[in-house]
Image (cartoon, rainbow, N blue to C red; front, side, top):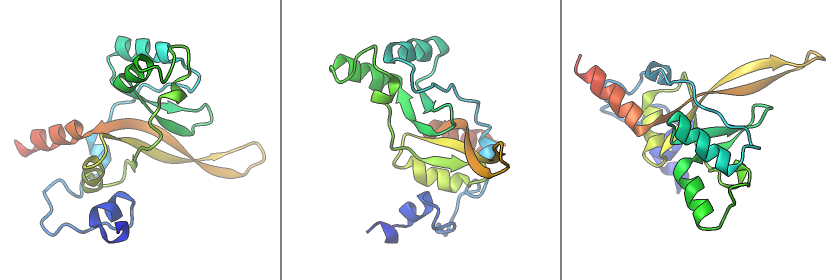
Length: 165
């Protein structure tokens, strides 16, 4: 069952410390990875335009975020191309037809240990930061801002670079 699986518990924020012999980087915050600002696509971007943008800018993937700030999912170059070639989507369809809507989010203040647990099952995690915003009548709400996308290679590069110091 999931609730007795330590890695699942860490990934979903129910457990912090489970590994007895943690590597040196385990408790370092995700912000130390210095994730670069991601390329973000709006949901109305067509599959064809998404392919062109990703190729032109040299990205494999991009978060799809509504103008309201809601993170809808992740679009990848390979999934978009595969979906179009298989006839599951048309070039003219919006990217929302080919997004991965099952994705993990991680905060800048979360540990690299938690990120490591997420990356054991997922290809990437979207790095978010919550920000309090106020509307015209003075009521507040929390909004998530996308700060980056991290992959296992980003974590491995950080560990390798700092291991040699």
